[in-house]
Length: 177
Length: 270
Image (tube, rainbow over all chains, first blue to last red):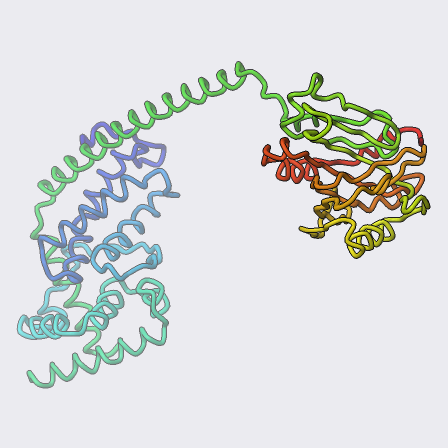
């Protein structure tokens, strides 16, 4: 694929599928690898999930309504492929990857490396569904309703999993304190 | 959002960012390019195959259409014509004839046809070897020189009375239908000479049993069909030699099965 081959529309967005997918890849690839890595715990698997998501986007390009829909499609595809049991579509959203300079370091947000490691270990130790809820809630900023729709469960179930996840995290952190 | 949740959000984003920064985007882009090109090749191949399949299907459909249009039109299925349709019998009918009539000079023409009867006879020796098939409208029966008008039930009673007097032998009696109408089928063998004992037509002529010669008879209820209220009696009988043609009884069953009243064009009454 050659990005120079991509035709450019009036809004500056490529109009061909190959060009559009290439443009989207360069903008969203890292963010999607980050999302997938939180769900699959394996860097290689996360990259493969993202590759699959872009290939799927290319195959379904003709059915997309807009470039914004393409971004939402990618988010959804990564979640679907990261968790085979995720069946419902994620609400399209304009998640902006924080600028590197604006991203607070662990120290600046009051989280030292030790606490960060403990938190991540606690997250990875959560049961699968509780972990899903936590990642969707705090990484993608999804509401309970959106998480419920995404995971195919009731909002009440999402609330229960979130509550238990909080209890487990606090228990783990208190034990380490 | 409590402090732990706030910390959790920041940690998750930091963790994701770290993972994202470690990925080789250019390498991943080359991998994706390769995958999409392979996908394009598969798609092109599939399109070529589909186009070929569609072309073949179109050719086959066209050939089938041409073949269909050129095929001779299939004639509608027409039921076979009956062997015989009466022309002067008082209750018109059609029927298929038994095989032995093939040996007559004219298969479809009866030996005798009148408003009261239609008969086929084959008699190599007229004295002993006749085989016959007859359709009769009996108006009266003759007993001891006295003729009595009959209906279906009284004709049947008359036969039973002859059997009771040991003048005839009745066997193989069974109910049946002839062209949907109720009938009684029975085998009668004459035991003694009963002149004009079988029944008489309206014109005065009569038929009789032959001693020792068995016959299969069908008494058919033709109520509403026969303008004179005569009793329809179909029979076949065979002499000693002809009886060797063992199919004659089966032939009669087939004849009864093929019998049809022709009500569309009733002939004039006798």
